[in-house]
Every structure is written in structure tokens, then in C-alpha cells.
Length: 382
Image 1 (cartoon, one colour):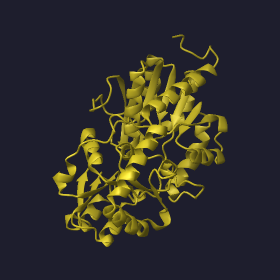
Image 2: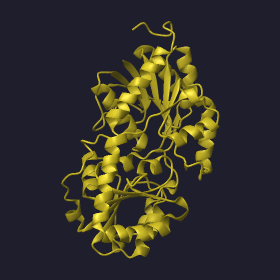
Image 3: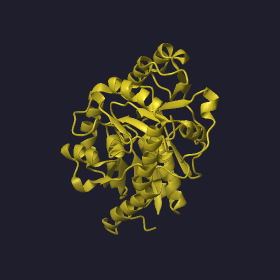
Image 4: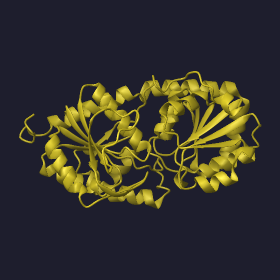
């Protein structure tokens, strides 16, 4: 099958990881993939497959959103005419291009699938961030014009459906990780940082990630000198937080780590992974930690609570993150048998429900279903 993938390669975020892992998986299954993304020129990045790459011009891009240039629509349309794909899959990048894609693909007679990553509070609660609520309200009418919209949980299905996206348009395909690559293993990270017990946060240092609640809980818990908290990631709040919560409190800031093997080494050395977010979709960082056999504490937002249910981890209520962590952090520090058990259950949950192999299989089935429902006249004849 010939697939035109519209996604993101930089700057690093969950959308980037999703696009890299899925396109690698599709190529491994023998599909032909062309990758269209916002860039000034073609650029090869570590761990990315060798595929046809089409740079789309832009004015500005960040981890959160992208502003395309005026030429982007024409470049995209001309590129799709040249590629002649069987199907177009857009891992939505929060750009204005997302809204014109259905019109472009209708003109070119191409089936169009979207993966909608925008995080949410979950469990029927109102979205905590007005920005996230606006994003859902803004996207819903346009998503209904895609052939299918991939989301990560039944909770998200209910949310989009309530906003007018047709039930038949929504496909629930959870994120998946490679459990061979992300697996328990030997690590020297504890020795490197002089830790007997190692706690890790990995993600953006931004308001919606609620990292300060974790930092305050850590500091107030007066964790022992042999326990360390590694903060992996970058973002707008990093400079201000780092100045108040440093090594004197056992907190070590590592910044953004591009090397995937290094990130895996850190997870393999960790005892506990903490994700205190106020909104999420389905966190790949959480799944990666679980796959490495790490005990996980995460807020019950997006689909993360669903991932951790029935003992695969500890789900935290967003209304009292700091107070709950003040109890949980010392508990996890003082009871290694507890974190070992939670880590084993986390790994088992990933193997049962969240492997990349299952994700790719479900995606292939969706592609075939969408193509089968379209008239034969709506093809390139290839």
C-alpha cells in the first residue's frame, strides 16, 4: 500500500515519536511511505526510516502548534499529485493545514485519515484548560469530514461524539510501544547519579504538565539523600523551576535528551516514573516507562488512568496531586517490593494491550476498511 504520511519530525514531542514509530512499523510491513512535514529542507534524523521526504514551508513551529507559509497548501497538493498515494494519513500537527486537508483530498479523490492527539482531562470532567476545550470545539466540525479519525480511548470517543463527530468516523486505536526495545535491562544510571532509589519525570516542562506539583511534593517529603529525582525534558517553565528546585534537594535536571538509547537506559535504571499532568491524550512516555518495567504514578487524565487501572500503576486525582505525591513518594522510596510488583504489572499491561505490533495491525485493518468503502472510480489506478 502506498501511504502519504503528514506528520511532525521536529521539535521533539509525543507527535514526533508517534510518527516515527508508526512509519517505521508500516515500512517493516512492506508498505511504501512518503513523509510530508513542516521543514525548510530535507533532513535526516536518528532512528527515522529512509523514505521519500517532502518538506512543507512554514513561518513558525513549536512543540504545540505550527503556522504554515502561504505556499504550504500548494506544495502539499502538488506533492500528493506526484506521490499518487492509496491513502493519506495526517498525524495532526495543530496547524491551519489540518482544516483544509479534507477539501484537498476530496479534490484529489484521496481517502483521508487523521490521528487526533490533543490532550483532555478525561472521565467526563470538563477540560481543565480553556485552550484544550477550544481546540476540541474548533476541530470537531472539520474532523467529521475526514474518512476516519483515530483517537486513543473510549473516553475520547465519547468526547468527540458529543461535539458532533459521527460515531462511524471514530476509530479507537491506542498508542503502542515496541516491548523489545523498551524492556527491562541493565543500567548504570543509579551509580552515575549516586542513587539507591531513582525517580523519573520525562516530558515537557510546561504548565499543563504540572511539574511544579511534583517538585513541591518531592521537596516537602524530605526524601532521603540516597533518593534522586531526574527531570528529563525542556520547556518554558524549566528556567524558573530549576532555580528553585536543584541538586540540594536531590533533583537533577537533564534537559531534553535526543538519544533514544539514553532515554531507555534512564528508564531501565528507574524505580518510579511520575507523570503529574493536568491533561493528556495517551502518554507515550508513560507507556515506554511501563514497558521497561517501571512502577508508574500518573494522573487520571486522558486515557492514562485507563492504562493504569486494576493495579498496573497508581492513578492520581488531579485535584490533589501534591498531597497524594507527598504520601506516595516516601512509600515508594521505603518499599522496593511494592515498586517491583507495580513494575511487573505495568510491563504485563503493555504486553496485553499496548504493543506497537498490535497498533500497526489495527491501522492496516482500518486502511483496508476505508479503501474498501470507497468506489473504485476514486483511485489513481495503481
